[in-house]
Length: 365
Image (cartoon, rainbow, N blue to C red):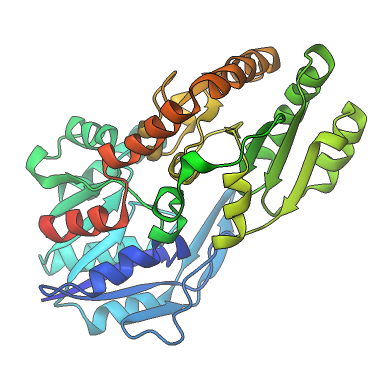
């Protein structure tokens, strides 16, 4: 049986999931998507059978940016007898709406959404439209339990929703590759951030907090910042704050190139809403410090256990973040082995692994 998975973009971090699905003995999978999307690193499909990228035509209406692909629609029409999985009810990808209307509403064939399961914060009309798309699908793959609760509150039958979680590639999990408890100890408090660098990530807030940590507390520390983006202003800010000697801007790094930095860190700080980065950090036994507003976070935030595998601080509260850092500075020195175990166990207990994600999808189909 053929399954056509239409993704907004074939992201590199999902390579293992795609391959596990491709190796299914029950289903013949095809993966199609746009050729680029918001700077996310993609899968190299040039030598892969069953994968295809199509060019997006992007356009704006007001403040909204849309991505449309006639190539994806044509590919679907050539395979319209297949079961279709589409990632997200996203009106910024109008070709997915067209495929749903043809495949499910007109042809009455099997169609699944793979989605966060939220209402999109688009007002009453937007929510009503989303309900139509969700309730008329064959089934829905939800990222987490909260997504499933949201969908059932919208009127989707409980049996039609499967929580599948999320994952990285297996090679990105620190505990698969290293004995985390043999990590080198250091007299310095080693703080790490890894992710794209944009204004929304609030690295400026992190720098302000670290300036307080340096000026008011007698702790030696280094903060390494991994990620591509606009860092010139942040470098200038670190100089103004007097923490430039404590900050290392390392630029964009991927795969095994980041391992040594995760292994040489004590704690992971993500100043804004966090997503899959929490999986990466926890897999290296790093407790995660992030903002307390759960609405800002991706579905992977359900892995976070306050006081167990990390902690939370209030938005814009630099002193609050500093206080949490000081508390964990001592805890890491007293109970680092227990903290590492708690971080790793949270991933295994929730099933945030590629083989479990792929199995959940196949079982539900």
